[in-house]
Length: 199
Image (cartoon, rainbow, N blue to C red; front, side, top):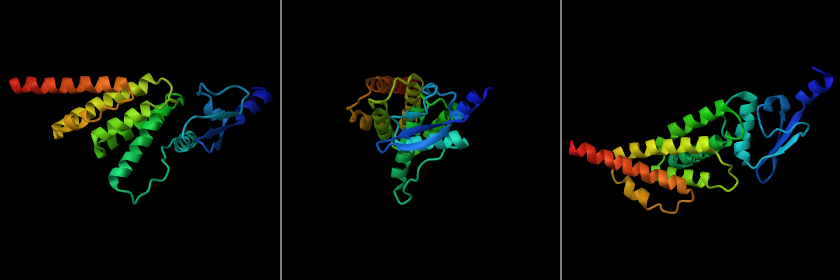
């Protein structure tokens, strides 16, 4: 390796997040898998929120998932909602920050936190996150969230048969594909129930 290329690999990239343009410096060698990294350009202006940027940068340096402080005095329901919102945003961010390990952690957090949030609130949250205009096309994470919601909906229905009526009251979907998926899932669940009742 030449002295010039060695120096280049050890240089740092300044990455900015959020409206306040919070800046972090990361060694270029930590970012070699990132498709958005431009040779000889030592800054990157990200469209991600500052709190998600913090999680990404912390993971790059340590390999650990570390969320910003959440108010411990808030009701458990609110804390669960905030934690799963962050996990969903991290999952979506891993579509253009190539971090398979972090993606797996985010998925696991979403799965474990789903029990702590009303399925209707979860649907609304996913709809909001998938409808952000700054979000690029993300087929992998989008499909994973669709599949997860379908399973969560079936589990919720087993516990509360009236959940479909509650969900139908939410008719202001931004993500039309999400609406179609949920409709198909509800029809499939009802068909299974009718079939089992006829046995």
